[in-house]
Amino acid sequence: MKLNEIKDNEGSTKNRIRVGRGIGSGKGKTGGRGVKGQKARSGVAVNGFEGGQMPIYRRLPKRGFNNIFASEFTTVSVGRLQQAIDAGKLDATATVDAAALKAAGVIRRIKDGVRILADGELTAKVTLEVAGASKPAVEKIEKAGGSIKLLAVKAAAAE
Image (tube, rainbow, N blue to C red):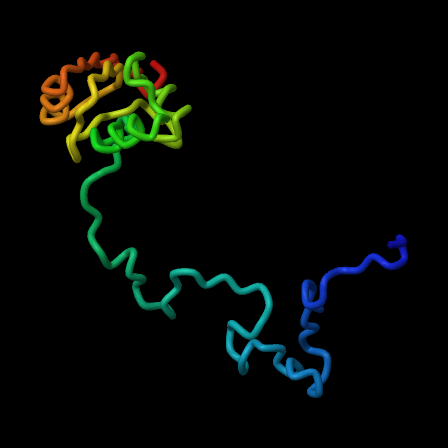
């Protein structure tokens, strides 16, 4: 093979469509924009505009609020923990914390901490250090002979 013989695989590249270049191109005249009107012109941004009618985002009432200081936890079920232990990804003898769960691929990101939920069954004796856990999850962990230590959650807002 020589440098001048290198080429792309057949069909790997397509030519771009040149719009507005004559009726024979199939994309001439209106250039794929339909016929007349505001959207056929250039420089149009009409997101949420309803022709002068009061838009839906203003017609509907606003309720509640979004707490920007609320902690956002990554949730892990006890069943998912057991699955990771069975697969050999998690070491049940060592203390399992957020970093260990991330390293094992059980969670993608830690966010403000990890919260354990009770979905599924747990048979392994495991020691956990997490930000939170539901009451049924704590019961399942202790029933299996394990223990859980709840960490203080760091405040999301700087004081």
